Each structure stands twice: as structure tokens, then as C-alpha cells.
Length: 335
View 1: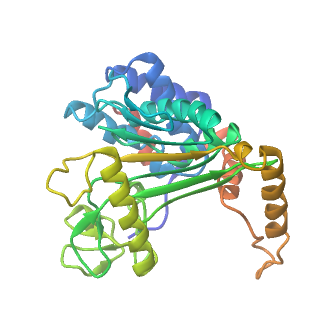
View 2 (view 1 turned 135 degrees about the vertical axis):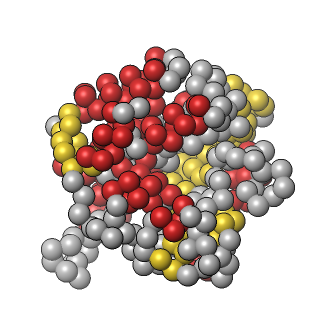
């Protein structure tokens, strides 16, 4: 397969407007459409095309198939002070998560900690976005969710787990540390991008329907599976997210009989100000970040980074115009 991708530049304003107009065309309320489009464009800017505007193709199909109810409003299902369950009512995952961020921020500021789960939730977008929102409020956060089966168990060949992303945000005096990764060898969206662009994926990413490793993303969509990252250790982390995301949200682990679809999302938020003070906490984190970045690199051309640095670098590259695949942009414009 090819490794070359034709790209073009588009202004942030044009891409945001295009995405918003598409969502409104597909019966999404204007305020929701603007918020979701902003999330997609932010993901594109941060270098995560897998969670960028390519998702509009999936989302519009989901509206057609009545998986996404575009005007559904998230509500609080149960409130036990420091623990809250939110019902997304099968509406937009991004809208439910931003509502959850608002609720969890208030609760964590009051009680020191807060745990929120989201039931009946669709795709939530780039999980690191919510870590960044919490960090802006000087809050520590961990967010994870289970998802539709796409990943084989360690040593297995059938789809059993979701790609089960995990994100953590840690505020500092400068940019926050933002850890955001799928517990699979690849996010499914990255395979979607590779397939759309006609390029191969790295070895160790997918297996075909017979359990044979492949570099062709088509093999995943033809009955194969994504491999867990990090061997048995990544498998264990994915399993933890599958069980806790599915069971705490009422979405069910994806291998259970009652699971149908959706993203069982959990957010755990901590206010460091309730421990030794937010100022001291951020000083400690900032000192540690400085020490890490001062580490002599093994290769001089590759300085040591902390999580979140790559996204910040990509944002600089994608300003004032965003680089996007021509084939993806053409597909979006055809919606």
C-alpha cells in the first residue's frame, strides 16, 4: 500500500464553519453543532485527524441509523454529592462530556474529589480535550471509556474489547501534562484515516479474520481485530477500563450479553487545593517537568518531551491554516 497522502491547507474558520453547517443540516441544534464542530477542529489542529472532521462521516451515518439523537439533552440521573451519574440519552457524546466537566468541576471544588459516569453515551471524541478543560480549572483528572468491540484479548483473535481510551490531565504553572492514548495498538479512528488515504499501518497493529498480523487497515474492517498495545500489560489496562467503564456507567462491558453499543464513560476529578494547596502542587509539577525536559536526549535531534508537548507543537504547525487530507476533506464536503 502507498505511504503518500495528498494534503491541502484550510483555514480554521472555514473548517469550523463547514463542520457546523454539516451538523446543522443533519438536525443538530445550532449551539450543539458549534460545540461539536469546535471539538473536531481542535482535534484536527492537535494532530489527531482520527478524532477530527473525518468523524462527521460516521456521525451522519449514526444519525441516519438513529444511533445518535442529535437534539438529546444530557441530564443528571443520580447525584450523591461527590458521585454523579449523567444520562446522555443517546445524544452527542461531546455535549454530554462537556456537561459532565461542568458538573464535576463544581463538585470537585466543593468536595475535593468527584467521580462522574455517563450512561447511554455515544462517541465522545478526543478524550484529552476534557483533561485540558479540567486542567484549566487547576483540577487533576482521569477519564476513560469502553466502546464497541474492536480489540482482541492478549493471545486471542476475536474482537472482545473496545479501543478503550484513557486520559489524564495534570495542571502546572505552564502547559498541563495531558496523557491521552487508546489502550489498543491504535485508535480505530487512525485505521479509518489510513483506509481513507489508502496507506498501510505499522506492523503489530491489526490482525486479519484468521488471526494473522497485517499492515492493511482493510483487514480490520473485513473481520479482523486490533491488537492490544504493550502485550499483556496493555491488555490488563484495557481490561480495567472495559470493566470499570462498562459497569460504572451502566453501559455494560462489551463482552457481556446486555451490551448493545455506546461508550461507558467515567471521569475522576481531584482538586489539589484540598490537599497541600493548588499553588504548591503546580510548583511541584512544574519543577518536575523542567527536570524531565532538561534530560540529555539519546539523540540530539529528538529532545525529551512530556505528554501534551506533541499536540502543542502540532497546534503551532496548524496555525493559521490546518493541514488536512484531500480525500477526507472531499468526503466531508460531499455530506
